[in-house]
Length: 365
Image 1: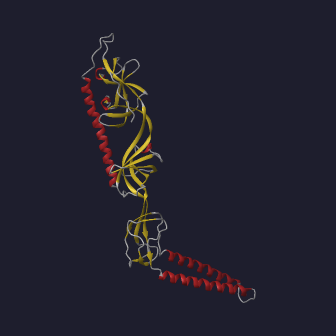
Image 2: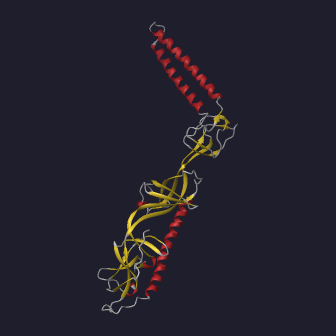
């Protein structure tokens, strides 16, 4: 599955990029620590001074971004249900049709003859049955004869119904409203039962199919909002309507599908697209990416001050990030983030806190 292979490559590249970013920032942070803030001449001059900024948690909508493919929500291969010659094509490729519109006209002569024969046979058998029913009381016929003739009438009715159905199948109609995406016959062609002669698709509603890594599938739920970004940058909105219950044996990923509306009937079925799924809201901190550091176990986190002005490392989970800003979870509702001088203090060491002259703006996402 090429799409799944591409997804795995993208996931691998993303992980490598995050790790590389953290390592780069680690060395940047070490460089920044060389410039400790000036020591104020106060009674706390004996303590190491560190600079900090106040940070408050804000609502953050977690998202999952994956690559997918746009497909028609409904599509059907049109196949001949009777053997006949094509007389005419009421529609052309690309035509929009409504449910019940005539799509193809096949020769009806043979089917009309069969229908006439079936009607005649039924009429004859019904007359024969009526005559024998009148003779039963007079002794000219037996009840077994009447039962046999009644069975023949029932069989004749079935043959007549089949003949009517066969005649109707010479005029196939659209099973739903959509677009004639393929038309592979011309007048004069002969179709056998089962031959494919066209394809009908409904593009007013589209299906976006994608694969999700096993570590992410637990965060998904039916009905979650989905935004689909096309290659031209335009957006379509919809919701998640399918999550596979079992993973693919090769990739260990789960197939998902989202339904989006396409009111302008754009020709985008079959195209690649990026899906963004809202997976829930959490409290998170927005901070400078330069504040992210690694502990001795290579765990990502930040350094904070407690109520006694002691330095602590707090592990965080990176929710999203850019080169300058990052959203993280795992911190308290309010934290004092050390912005300068943390490299001069040990874990648990008491320091002299120096607030930033201008607080770091904690804007909403």
